[in-house]
Image (tube, rainbow, N blue to C red; front, top):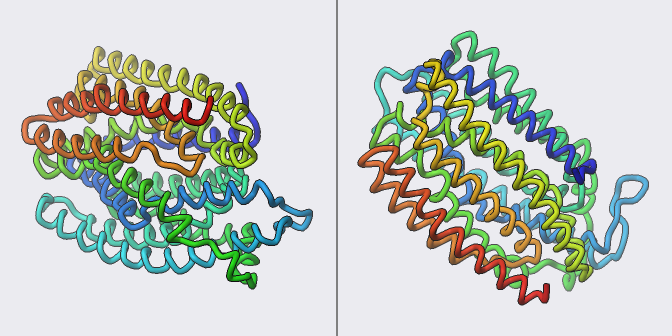
Amino acid sequence: MGLDFHILSTLVMRLWSVFAGGIMILGIPHWFTQAEQGYYFTFSSLIALQVFFELGFNYVVTQLVGHEMAYIKFGDQGGLEGDARHLDRLSSLIKLLVKWYRVIAVLFGICVGAAGYLFFYIKGLPDVTGWVFGWGFLTLFSSMNLFLSPFLAVIEGAGRVGQVARLRLIQSVFGYVPLWILLSCGGGLWAVPLISMASALITAYWIKSHGEFIFDLNARVILDECRVSWRKEIFPFQWRIALSWISGYFIFQLFNPIVFAYQGAVAAGKIGLAMAIFSTTLSVAMSWVTAKAPVFAGLIAQNEHQRARSLFWSLWLRSGGINLLGCVIILAIVFLLDLHDVKLVYRLPDLRVLFCIAVVTVVNHFIFSAATYMRSHKVEPLMLSSIAVGFLSLLVVYLGAQRSVLVTMVLYAGVVVFVALPWCLCVFLNFLKQKHY
């Protein structure tokens, strides 16, 4: 199966996510009204607006650190050892991250918090309670998580993917279990911030306890000539990533807010639950590829392109098969539940909509995998594709939501299959040729 500690830790985290997501799927019909279900998933979509503030910096950080770590290693005492120039460059990067994320975390909390409040106040339902408290504290703790996120990216880039995955598992357990208890007691939307709160508090403690090398790097005195130049080294890569990820918001996260606005909270809840189910399947399958992103970066930094390519194709085949199998199983289960008139299926859109989402999930697996590999070279060749697909997705979701959820998903699936996939395939094959693969 090609499992090592890092892949296994990431996979365990994703499997826990499947379990936790399954509990939520089964529990949501009992814990939330149909309208509250719509609020719950739209909360998540609006919190994802943090991509407009973070601008893909975390991904760039992981790649930069991965390349620097080709010349650095962890010593017996847990600190970093190696070439002084590369240690200085990492130190410069840490200092930059502290300044950058201190500002954007505050801006995110204020701007998104206020915008979300106005959206739900205008488009929401008067009989839904608890959303003001839930939304307010969710944005507060999400801002804290945003500030802490780059330091986890540094640790992942340093090769400790498994350790971070284990941390995320602990965060999730200590977030979901209290959430389930409070929801079972009738907490409703009041309980939603618990996961974000657990993540923020546990991450802060874990970084303080296990990220000593980050504090050492931040305190390190460096030479000016070793400073990482944001304008010359980060911006040329980041702006492409930022545009791609902003486009990704329109591609993946815009459904719930627009459906909420035009079809109502109930329809938004159904589409949100369906997207969450298939996203979990894709996330589990992508564990094989994403866990090895720092390895790709390291091999490429050492000009081991052939080994990097062989590793990629091996991981993609394994994870792709698992993703396809997962989608088939989901459709089969829903079909059987619908056949026996189980009430749970009333919280999901019909099978035609689910089939469209399944097709999109299978296609996105290849796109995400290819993007991960190409970005390990510190380039973003899918920028134009992401912008075009993002614009088309925004257009078809906006137009489709005014008709029905089915029309929305058919149009969206068409964009992914007939625009995003061929474009990505052409770019990827051309990329391999340019790199003399």
